[in-house]
Length: 356
Image (cartoon, rainbow, N blue to C red; front, top):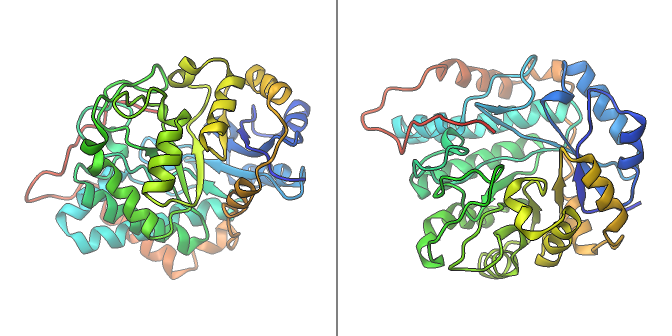
């Protein structure tokens, strides 16, 4: 069975009969896990094994484990700093900041892979303009070149562990106040004025970026459709101008920022038509049921190949990670940066408002 274009959620810490039925549908290609799906590591390993056993090839399993306030699995996992903390470390010492970013990218990925997951939707490469409450300390920095350098280092750390990185939220969520979870943010800049926002993507793509998550944001000077449903943004800017050949995944189609497009099935149809490969549909099981009934059961071979390339490389069991040199180094970075470093000058911003 092929992997379908939908990535859905499950209700609890173990699969129920309804979950198994939905996950067995050919339109489903993956599962995204949340805090509600986690009790402790042994339970997570069992849940991932249960999900993998349902299908061949196995479904992809993902989570948001960025660090800071966006870390779904906490007890039993290393407490990861926000990406903003890496930007602060870079401002104090650029070489050490890059080394820390690569080491903690490895740590985040290695811990998840050892439990049976494939990927974490990270890093966030939005610029910290000091406007977006939902981004805030999820951003590395205000300066595009600094974000690019840290994101490349973080991606390489993830790759060292065996995990493919996903840069988000394309083309840039940092310059708007509104939160796309609750409404459709509008960014009125011209494309020419967004080159700094696109710089991290250019650098990451030059370094083999595997995946991009597209935001539910409207840029009316560029296209009348939100970016996640826009052929101009996905086929034009991302594919043609930035020469990106990897996986394009939507932010959650159940978010209010996507509602202007229509029903959940209509959002899915338009996202696929715009060039997206993988569609997140979470926290709306009735909507997912409609998707499974109404979405055409067609599989794009190119999307299939991109999905397969997101498969994580299983590492040693979690307990064995502590014996590695990479683990020791990463834990030293965590201890050394338990508090924000003292800077000779302030970083882009220190606002930590918002969650989600």
